[in-house]
Amino acid sequence: NAGVMQNPRHLVRRRGQEARLRCSPMKGHSHVYWYRQLPEEGLKFMVYLQKENIIDESGMPKERFSAEFPKEGPSILRIQQVVRGDSAAYFCASSEQGGHGANVLTFGAGSRLTVL
Amino acid sequence: GENVEQHPSTLSVQEGDSAVIKCTYSDSASNYFPWYKQELGKGPQLIIDIRSNVGEKKDQRIAVTLNKTAKHFSLHITETQPEDSAVYFCAASIGQAGTALIFGKGTTLSVSS
Image 1 (cartoon, rainbow over the protein chains, first blue to last red):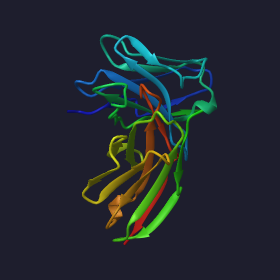
Image 2 (cartoon, rainbow over the protein chains, first blue to last red):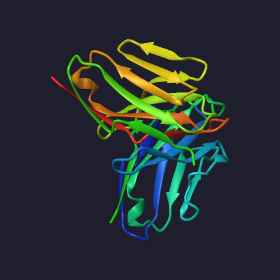
Image 3 (tube, each protein chain N blue to C red):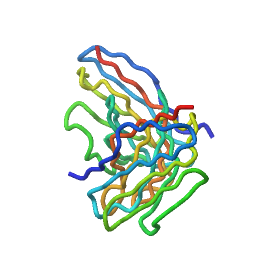
């Protein structure tokens, strides 16, 4: 079991460019979560998805950020027109079950975005 | 909004000593409380968790206690070893549906030999 796979591990973008981060959940997991970690901070929830559905996006910024988890392929977190404040580590997690306090999450190694 | 407070932010102990990290949460509907260990450059790894119908759980040198009335829970590591050095995060599930977790800001544990 390869665990939660994230790529790229490191991404450098200039202001105004787009960043795309990919996440493949653990085998058998159908629930995907994205979290953002700023330096010296804990993880902040962004969005929770199941296949083809966004379940909870209460932590997503209203503009420039979007996420999807298509029927086939990895989940993608997309940041348009990046700004320096978007520089952070973005972690994806997956779980076999979702909701109702059953969230045993397995995290990936993260994608570190640097905006120049 | 809901939040989780974690203390201390840094903790230094000698090898063999015990370490205790404490967290408080605000959402009375929270019912799942995991602890994660994060090593430099890696993702968080679940080390132990507890659900609201249990007051204490132990796994070898690691234990977690939960006081739902006071809304706080603690991580206890006994006989610490240098490889325990890492950042530890507590978390609490959000709301009745528990669709996500709120994390504390982390405790950097340093175990010196």
